Image (spheres, rainbow, N blue to C red):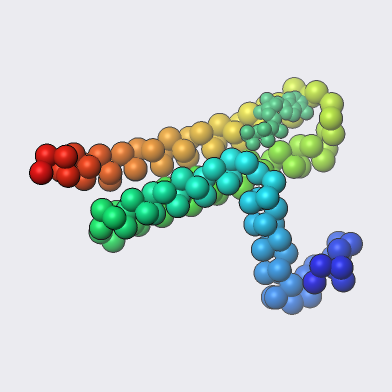
Length: 132
Ligand SMILES: Nc1ncnc2c1ncn2[C@@H]1O[C@H](COP(=O)(O)OP(=O)(O)OP(=O)(O)O)[C@@H](O)[C@H]1O
C-alpha cells in the first residue's frame, strides 16, 4: 500500500485499504507518542499481575474499560494536538493552548478513572496475599 496511495486524499477504495490506513495510524501512535507507549507498558504490567493473581471475568472487564478509556483519550489528545498544529503551526495561540490543555485534561481524567479501577481490584487482593 505504502507508495501507491501515499498522496491519496479521496475515500478508501476497499475495506482492506481502510484497515491498512487505520493500522498505519496505530503505528504512528506507537512510534511518535511517548505517553501512548507508556500506557502500553503499564497495560502489559497490569496484564501480567492480573494473570498471576488469577483475576475473575468481571475484574478483567473493568480493566478493559479502564484500558480503552485511557487509550481512547490518548488518541483524541493526539488528534487535537495534530489538528491544532496543522492550523496554527509553531505560533503561540491562546485557543490552541486551550484546546491542547483540555485534551490533556481528558487524558488525566481517564487515567484517574483507571487508577481507581486498578486500586479497587488490586489492593484487596494484595492485602489478602499479605495477610496469609
Ligand atoms: N501553539 C500553541 N500555542 C499555545 N500553547 C501551546 C501551543 N502548542 C502547545 N502549547 C502548550 O504546550 C502544551 C504541550 O503541547 P503539546 O500537547 O503539543 O505537547 P506534548 O508534549 O505532545 O503534550 P502531551 O504530553 O499531552 O502529549 C499544551 O498543553 C499547551 O499548553
